Structures are given as C-alpha cells and as structure tokens.
Length: 358
Image (cartoon, rainbow, N blue to C red):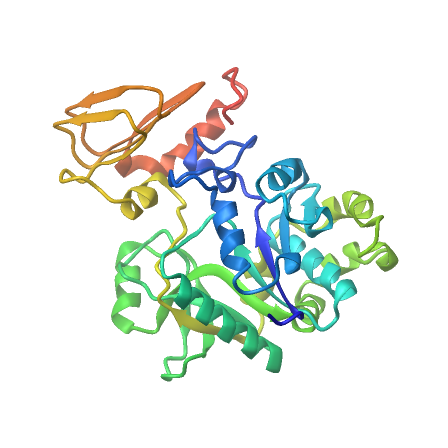
C-alpha cells in the first residue's frame, strides 16, 4: 500500500430521513441498518483498509460522535478522529482535513468518502478508486467517481461529462436534483452520471482550490497554522471552526473549478438515503415487501418495508405502500410514496414531544 495515500470518511451527518431509527444521538452511519451485524461506518472502514493502511484512515465527524467512532472502530488511533465542533457542511471539514494532512504528509493524496453508502461490487470499487488515486497523484486534478445511472432518479445530483470514450472523463457541469422528465433526458443523452460524493485529490490540489475559490475558509482555519497537526489542534479547531462559512464542497469548489474529472463507475452503489432506497436495496418477498426483524409476519400486504426489534412480534395485514418502523420510544407509520415529507415532520415535532428520538 502506498504510504502517501489516505482516506477521509465523512461521518458527521444526522440522516434524518431514516427517522426514527436514525437520530441526532445515534445517526444512521452508526446503525446496523442492513441487519448484517455491522454498522454502515464499520463496513465502510473495512472496505477502506483494502486500499490504504488502517492508520491512514481518518474519520471526520461531529465531536459529539467521537465516542461512537471509538466504540465501533477501536483499532483507530484517537488522533485520526477529526471532531467538528459545529455542523458547517462539507467544505469546511474537507478544508480542515486537507490542512491536517498537509502537516502530516505534504505529499498526501486522499479520498473523501461517505460513511453510509453501500457498495455491492467491492472489487470494482477498489479498482476505480485505485485509478482515481493514480490520476490524482500524477495530475493537478479533482477526481470524482460518477455512478452509471440505472433509472431516471430524481433524488440524486448528476454529473455532465465529456463523453469522449475515455476511462477518465472531463466534467462539463454538475446538475442539481432534476424533475422526472429532465432525469429521463439525462439518461437518453448517455453522458450523465450520478454524483455519489466520492472525491480524490492531492493535498496540494485541494488546498489550492480553496485558495482560489473559498479563501475565507482557509483564512479562518489557518489563523494560527502552528496549532494544526499537534496536540493542541482539536482545542484550536473548537475555537475557530464555527467561524467558517457553511457551504458544501460542491458549491464551494466543484462547480467552480476547471480541473474536475470523473471515472464512470458500476460498483453496485446505493446511498441508502431513505427508507425507499433501503426497500429497493433489500431482497423482497413475492409481494414486494421487506421485513427487517426476526418476528415480523405480513399478511395480504404489498410494497411495504417494516423494521422492528428482533424480540418484538409484529403482525400486519392488508397494508400497501407503507413504511413501518418501530423503535423503543417512537413508531413511524407513513406512506412510502410520501416519504420525502418525513424530514419536515421530524423538524416540526422538535420541542413538541418529550423524546430522545430526534
């Protein structure tokens, strides 16, 4: 393994669309949402150690989740956990990660990967990331993995590429989540990929990109550059980080840079962003139903997903197109076709209900 290669796993999100299983206390990346005995974070970490040494894996998360990371990744050195004191979106945390690695190893090439995605074709995934590392090592390039779309999905952003037949394509533009007709046109054109939020770049390239497009973020984080990389780093970051601009790396860098490239990737990817995406991912019975739990009994029901504790017996009859999630102190029963409302419902309940389920 190349000692200059690193992976930063982004693990600070809340995953509110997976309520009531995912909460601010224990977000979905720390859950065994697939029922396989491992959290999504643990599965991501184990994939990463097939690309880089475990000591070259960083977890970038909210400081409140440090103990959860330590619990699930006990082999990870504490200094490899970068704890954000505030949720300021992805650009500031990536800038901090780059500056941290610049002190550790100025020659570093690093990938930024989500902590809560599922990859079915692991060897293809490793091969594509290896290609991205190699390209970023030899070129002043921001490299993304673009997922080959399989349907006109309106829940993903899209990458418009130069369809020149090359294995690594130049990116023409990033497109926001489209309506159905626009998504269909993207598939028909054939040069659009899903944006999976997976990036690879050198420390030098991404720091220069921030210097060119979002210099204020660097100015805040480098107020006292000597504090980075040492024992005082977390205390220093706790003080200055909340002052950084709240902006995603897509808006801050990717949509402005002219050296962005993508690798079309067929890796069996799912972002597991919603209960519907989990329903689509999991194996279903003859009535298109998914049951996560050992004692769930479905009668004359169709197109539903049910999640419940293994110790609880659940019997459901005559239900169609519904999400049913039973947790210790919250129960969700909601139409699958209206699941995009769940995030707003959760927001509206805050402060009105005495519960830790938010």
